[in-house]
Image (tube, rainbow, N blue to C red; front, side, top):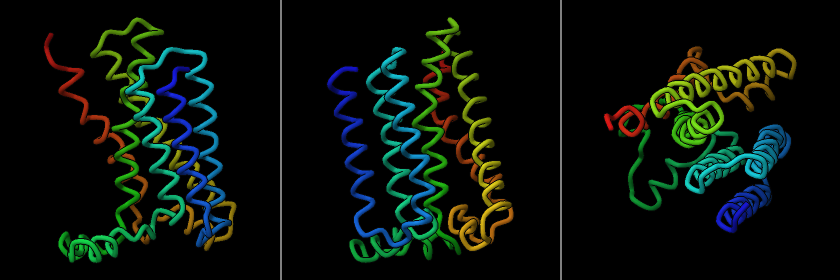
Length: 200
């Protein structure tokens, strides 16, 4: 692992630790943080064993960092509207007509944006897939893993206390939350379409 990757991973670790300074919901955040730690370890292990471009590595780090940041506020309570009002005098939710906190949608979209290039690189390198095929396979992986995460959230809802499950899942009363989250991840992946499907 080169210096750029080590620096990116260290920065992610620092952001993760910073999110634990006087956390508002420590128990609920801990469950999110388990996923963060698993992601950091998985990325570190993968980068030691297989080639991954610096830019793709940094993109994955960006996603992990944003996830750690959002986990501090359990996604549903990230105060972006208050920040915008204090800095710009602007309420995004009011302007867009939103009745819920949409930061979770942003993170799901970033899952597609930030991980698709790394997954495509994996298929191109280990399975000799061409640019277009590796991209299509990456799209499939993003949607499949995103759906698996929604099943995990469903399991949390089944086996944990209702209040704790709602705090973790952050559905905010939206019965189509899982479907919209998966769609956001797919949309994030599709943002790379011009790069991977353009003619040579």
